[in-house]
Length: 121
Image (cartoon, rainbow, N blue to C red):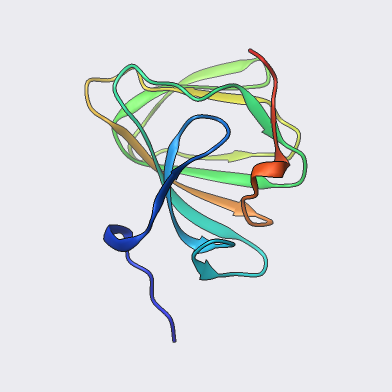
């Protein structure tokens, strides 16, 4: 049995600009069909709008608040919210709160940089 821990997970910046610590996936605890990471957006930060060719994402916000746009729909989001983002759906997340916005992000298939397409928005 292998166990990963957030405090020892190596952090890196994804193509959308968020800082993530992968707990399970292609660069950490090996997975086949999905990945799990904690992402953080600092106060005033945002991701670059992007979509994933293959990956479906689930965001579960664990602290903070912000705004999320998926396609042409935009909504306020906060800790405790869970959102599913379909493959091909352009999305952007902003931290509009006064503390870091953290979320767990599950991708299936596992997150890969080459599955991320920046839209330029």
